[in-house]
Every structure is written in C-alpha cells, then in structure tokens.
Image (cartoon, rainbow, N blue to C red):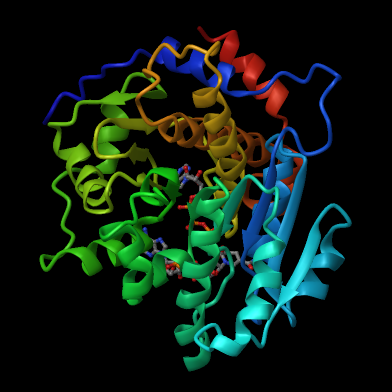
Length: 360
Ligand SMILES: NC(=O)C1=CN([C@@H]2O[C@H](COP(=O)(O)OP(=O)(O)OC[C@H]3O[C@@H](n4cnc5c(N)ncnc54)[C@H](O)[C@@H]3O)[C@@H](O)[C@H]2O)[C@@H](O)CC1
Ligand SMILES: Nc1ncnc2c1ncn2[C@@H]1O[C@H](COP(=O)(O)OP(=O)(O)OP(=O)(O)O)[C@@H](O)[C@H]1O
C-alpha cells in the first residue's frame, strides 16, 4: 500500500482557512460578505437550489438570488423570505430575437460575486437539453466578464458531459474570460464518472481504495503528493479542464487544480441524506468569493499558497471542512432521523472556526 505523504501541514492549512474569512468589523455594507446567484430549480427539483442558496448565507454570505424556472420560483420563494427568487422561462436562447430577454436575465447577475450552477437545474426534456447549455454558456460568459467566480455541481456536470458547448468553455477556453481558473466543480462519484467518460475513452477504474486512504491518513486535512495514485484521476481531469478546481466528494474529499492535491476527511454525517452536496455547493460559492478577496488583498499572506497559486483550492478545502462539521453536528443530534433542515440548523461557522483554531 502507498504511504500518503503530505506536504502543506495541517496547522498551516487551518491557519489559512481562518484567514479566508473577512472580518466582521461592524462597518461593512450589505452584500460585502458575499452575494451569490444559484442557477437551478425546475419542475422536479425545488429543494436543491433552496439548500444551496440558504447554505451560502449560513456559510457567511449576505445575499442570495435564485434563478429558477417560472414553475419552480414561487415554490422556492415560499421556503424562505431570505432568498431573492427570479423566474426565467420561455427564452429560446438560440434565437436572435430573444436577445432582449437574455440581456434582462444577464442584468440580474449584476453586482453578484459567484454563480453556482446545476443544483436542481434538471435535465429532462428535449427543449431543456437544447436550451440549457446555451443558457449556461451565455450566463457563464457574462459572469466571467463581470469577474464572478463559478461553481458547477449536480446537473452542471451532466451538461459538461452531454454538451460540447459547455465542455468547450473548459477544453478550448477563451483566455480573456479565464473560465477554468474561476471555477470549482463539485462532482460526487457518479458525476465524476460522467465527466471522466466525456473526456477519455477508457473506463473510470481507480486503483486505490477510499477506505484504505481514509484509514491511512492521520490528519483530517492535508496535502497529497501529485505522484500518488489517489492524486492521478482528479489531477488528470483538472488538467484536461485547463486548471478548473475539482472537488471529488466521498468518504475523503479529494481536491485538485492539476498542480496540487488536497484532501479533507473531517468527520461528517454517517447518514447520506440528499441535499448535502447542495449545502457544499452553496458554501463553496461563498468561499470562492472570499478566496478571490484574499488573492486581491496584498496584506493577506497565506502559509500554504503563494500569491501566484490558485486560491480556489483553499475555498474548496474550507467549504468541505465546514460542511462536514455541520453535517457531523446534525448527525450527532438526530442520528438516523437526520434530514437536511437539521444540517441547516446546525450551521455554526464561528463555533467551527473556533474549534479548528483550538486544534492547532
Ligand atoms: N430535494 C431536492 O430537490 C434534491 C435534488 N437534487 C437534485 O437532483 C438532481 C439529480 O441528482 P441525483 O442525486 O439523482 O443524481 P446523481 O447522479 O448524484 O445520483 C444518481 C444516483 O446514483 C446513486 N449514487 C450516488 N452515489 C453513489 C455511489 N457512490 N454508488 C452507487 N450509487 C450512487 C444515487 O443514490 C442516485 O440514485 C440534481 O439536480 C440534484 O441537484 C439532489 O441535490 C438531492 C436533493
Ligand atoms: N461517506 C461520506 N462520509 C462523510 N461525508 C461524506 C461522505 N460522502 C460525502 N460526504 C460529504 O458530504 C457532502 C456531500 O457529498 P455527497 O457525495 O453526499 O454529495 P451529492 O451526492 O452531490 O449530494 P446531493 O444529494 O446534494 O446531490 C460533501 O461535503 C462530502 O464531503
């Protein structure tokens, strides 16, 4: 069995996670701690975008807008007065005459920091399969032009696989828009396989066991050597997608942009109820913005990353750690009876940061 040698130390990573969070000094204005847009919500799925959106706020963000189909919007709005829900529908993105409606939709993204795509977006129906990739391209391009960060989860991974229009944004990227380097993808194992199958002809057949990895790693958070077999599949996909940050979810979360590889095995929930991935996507959406702020702020010096390195790796590590801590706290309270709202109720970022601080 391989030894899973680590590079950045646990304590340096924890100190960096603590530095990621903007100070709440009492002089901030509304929105300064993060404004997200979640693009998701469809006929079948109204819970997923709600979970992602509300988690972005629980994670530290100030405002969240959901862009959902007209059918799903009032339902999502009914879940929480916290959310700004904007319906879109009946726009044929392939037609020139839709431009006015498209521009109106794009204008809804103004002043937001991160676009989280895919939670409950849905993939059913010929019209959706044809239209959604064009919508994604248009909104992603606009988001990149206005310097937003991007998170792709769930059905976004489907469109990455099924649509050349979406995949091309990563495999043939426009240098000016820098879409890969502003993206974190958060596939579960099924979604990771879908992305893999769209990139390579050979089957996805990892040589390592996540259980072996989990048992061999002495620390809960750390860095893995690039040469390890555990690092190979995620780095390969990240490199094929021109440096997009990938967080492959599982018993151990593996995170890479192709240059470095990190893991998180912080205790989470033993019950795998639906929606935990949506919570992670919303959380990471907020932290992707914080990572951008850290990069831009010359006074913030990280220990585990140089200014030239990709700060989204830290956002992904932090999002995974905090989400898992909230899932663990909720599971301890509810055990087998755990449902997603228990996780939202147990989202106590300050307490988790204090506990991380006292662990170093
Ligand atoms: N309440 C809601 O509205 C929810 C909606 N969701 C949305 O549902 C849509 C489809 O997501 P799905 O979860 O169906 O798609 P996935 O591709 O994530 O999962 C497909 C199936 O694979 C199974 N599976 C997952 N991991 C596995 C593993 N390691 N081994 C074997 N089987 C495994 C799952 O149980 C599921 O039945 C997405 O838009 C997603 O955002 C989910 O986020 C869950 C909650
Ligand atoms: N076996 C596990 N033990 C502990 N935590 C896990 C385990 N698998 C995944 N997680 C964590 O749970 C969160 C959600 O991952 P999961 O694989 O459940 O996402 P998902 O399948 O996309 O969820 P969703 O139901 O929202 O679609 C992540 O933060 C991940 O770190």
